[in-house]
Each structure stands twice: as structure tokens, then as C-alpha cells.
Image (cartoon, rainbow, N blue to C red; front, side, top):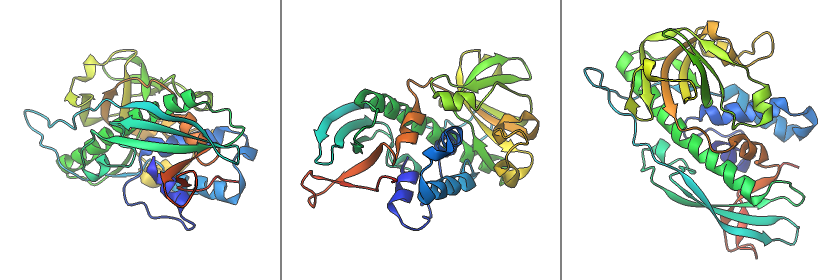
Length: 313
């Protein structure tokens, strides 16, 4: 979540101090692609989209895992929650300030820095005048973003584990939250979770994956499980490797679809069963810098808050 915010705070292209969450950038790109072009405003907006696309979903695989009779657990699986703490504090501009307390959300990237994930963080936003985004919609979407943070952190840790265990430095990427639509002994058919918004739903279709790594890892959250124990209706995230390599992943498919929609070029290295999303995280992603900006507490503004970055005009 903080990757795009850090980028918006800078006037020059930033160098992220941690790996990008694949799902976060996937969803931004998909949502912006699906919207009418005039909604991607100005050179700054187009530059942001270009910056994200060039880095979407790439994970460096390095870390540790003990493979033998038992597999090491990835992480304790925290349960995130979001509760509104400040409502509709008005500003002279007509914009409003809202605040939320997030529990176990890892909003500021603590888990990626190997810090405890049982965090309690307060976040504040300035919502633009005229925005149709309600406080409840923002809370629900932020809750879903927190849920994705937890699962993304788990997939990143698993990615590192696989690389060390296999001794093979690869590049890979993870999927969005997918709902299993069908499963056999040798295939898995899935579609993006129904909680994602219409733009993401329309940009995706059912995909049947049939190429699996020899040492496929399957987890129920942080507990190893058998592939055969997955069932229709489960939500999963998968770690994939593109057979054409990292450069191939960045290329669009001939029909304009996402690269991960072509299973003939994909190998599944890991599957993680995750809790289903409770809301639409893409609603928050698409609102960043257009309908809302994050605020930091400060003493230089009468409101007591300063913008962490500016609205895209």
C-alpha cells in the first residue's frame, strides 16, 4: 500500500525500499486499464501507470525453508480489522477528513521488514469534495486491503522459502485472490474473488491451470495441506512462474488479456488457501490520489493534518 504513496510523495521516480506487493500493483493496473482513458488524468497519472506496469508482480525469490519430513510454517496468520475513529471533520475547501484504526493490517510495511505483524496503526485521509465514496465504503475497502496485505506477506515469505529450498534463483509473481471453480487430480480452475469490483471481473475469466511444479507447495493459510484437500469455493493465491521468463510476463497477450490468463505459459509453484475477501480492495486502490489522499498529523496546518502527497489534478 505504501509503495504508491511513497511514489506520489516524490517528484522523481522513486526507488522502492522493499519489494512491491504483486497483487497491489496488479489491481491498480487492471482497474486503470478497464476505466475510460479520460479518467487517467494527466502526465503524472500516465507516468504512475507506466511505473507500476514495469514493476508489477515481480518478486525476487530468496530466503529460507527446511524441506524434509515436515515443512516449515510460513507465518502466524493474523486477523486484520478496521474501525473508524474520526468522521467527516470538515475543511474550508469542502473536503473532509476521516480516520481509521487498523489492527494487524501491516499498513506501513512492518511485516516486510521482519517486524511483528500484530500492529495497531491509525491512518487518516482527506476525501475530496464531491466524492461519492462514503465512510463505510472506505472502511470496507480498507479492511479488504488489510486482508490482502496479510496474504501478500505470506506469499512473499513462501516465495523466499521456495527459492532457498530449490537452490534456483527464479523470478515469479502471485495472483489476486482466486475462487476455486473446479478441481481434479491434475487441474485447478479459478476466477478472481467475486468481491473485486466490476472492472476487474470484466477483465478476467475462468482459467484452468494444469502445469504444476514437481515440488508443488500447498498451504491452508500457514499450515501445509494436500492438493486434494482443496475444494470448490475455496479462495487461494498462487505463486506462478512464466515459462517465457520475467520479460515474457511483462508482455501483453495477443488478445490484450493479462499474461497470467494464459495457462499454457504458466507453472504453479505454490498454492495458499486464504480467507475470502470481505470487501473490494480495488475501490481503495482506484481512489488513491483521485478521491482521497493520506494525511499525517502535523502542527503546521490548522486542521492538525498535512497531506502525505497531493491529489492528481
